[in-house]
Image 1: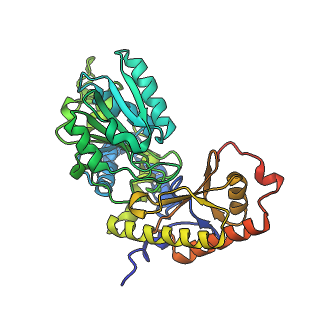
Image 2: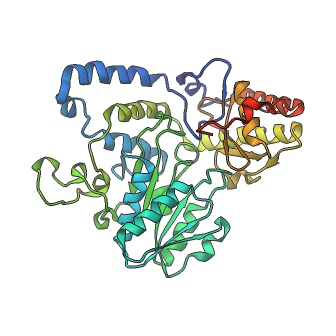
Image 3: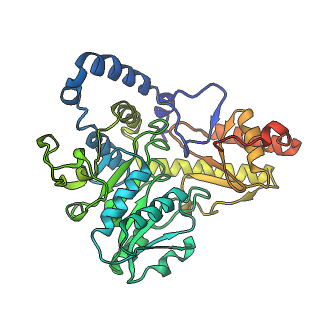
Length: 397
């Protein structure tokens, strides 16, 4: 059987000798990006100046990039717009969803990424209409959906353990109860097949710098279900989301469809980097990505459990119930991870004791996984992690 990722493995500029298992946090540099940025700087900006907005397609780049992302998340063309950060987009999606209902309860779970909860807490306070954020354990979400819930707001893949929510089932239950849904796809887009349209999701947000490889701080994206957009009124508005931005009207009239989720002038250089990075996905089938990532993660779990008896699997054992990452617990996980990084195997750490490893078949092979597991086993066997420099906490873990 032909390996569909032979082509993509040559598309990334990874340092020699590095096994990169942290694409779930920041994707590596696609080789196409520096050339694209140089062209945008020297030719499009440098020679066309302000004409680049029309001549170089800058003005429509959020929609152009959005359509590329849409293909990866089961969304129709025109339903996804790129721009802003995931947090800003979540604020827009949440306030838009709440504008469509009189209910007051936003339901989420305790495993959600904290920034999503912070956004919700402050958005509800700013609205000042008596909304409540209700949190339950991830396994209790389904039973907590009732007739009081206005919005179900979940991250599909748990950032710590990789636990995977059933988007279709939970969305169906929310809709049956009269609630709307918002899905955070930060650890889903580019990692596993997502079918937003088929699941009936109302809104979704996600970032461009993890599995989509758009670079640090890359623009995020927002999805609005076709048919829902015209009723959505986000509490953050700006001229790029206006029906006629260059009419310069004094009153806000939202643009049609997902375009109303735009706010200010898009960051063209970072948008261009993400646009170039997304070309790596040309001709790639997400079903193949899923199959290969499961094979890689299953291999890693088997190798680690065979050679590292002191580690405890924190991720669901059944691959159908986890995303494209595997987490193990260790009391000194931070120091162990720093020792691994010093040996050229890059993962990351999440408090209090989680070591995370991401599996991206676009640039990873089975031999990389075996090397990573062997290096981890060697570090643990010799306790070489127990050195002062590995215990010293950096600002970013």
